[in-house]
Length: 215
Ligand code: ADP
Ligand code: ADP
Image 1 (cartoon, rainbow, N blue to C red):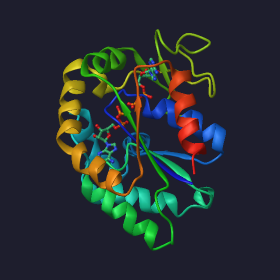
Image 2: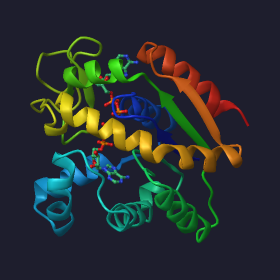
Image 3: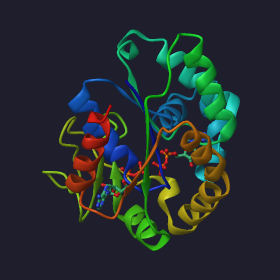
Image 4: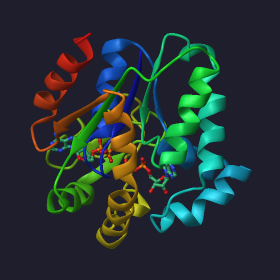
């Protein structure tokens, strides 16, 4: 099963992809997490991505497509995977289909989480992340068991540089300018499922599970 999560920054993609990863036992592949890891490691990809990400701009298609191509060829992706934050441009969507086709695979479901701009900015202000485990928390809506520490890894939680309100608004603008053709592309193939993101984490999860269970 290959599942694509779409939606504006802060819609809950990472949170839901993490829950689905545990339920379906297939890995969540977050290009944002992979790029942040590349920056932390000081790799070539990290050097290209750093300034762009800090300012909320997209990393070039060939860079993210390369990362995903390499990642999905690994053994733990053999039974499927969940894409969180990829594709983000129509070029990336087409590149994904091409690499899947080369392996006789297709995207099975696309889930787009929808959320209004005001809620997004408020959510991002409270977001805290665990860089190593990839877990996402919120100071009010989804706090960790011990303040400031990840439930899974125990590592110190941090706030992302690009979660400041002005950068969030810029990222939101980019999303609005790029998302339409991708949604149309998946809708034409009958793959698109929209889910309202302004429900509790558990309600969103229930709706996603019923979409996954549909044939
Ligand atoms: P969010 O969870 O808030 O939507 P992500 O962690 O997915 O944010 O992405 C953070 C940043 O990483 C983006 O603003 C962009 O700079 C970069 N990025 C992540 N995925 C992609 C992608 N598929 N294409 C281009 N840039 C990406
Ligand atoms: P995305 O990956 O789409 O950028 P995240 O999963 O990182 O979104 O969620 C953004 C912030 O909102 C995080 O702090 C997360 O804990 C919180 N969050 C996620 N889902 C919900 C929800 N349904 N209700 C309230 N807060 C949520």
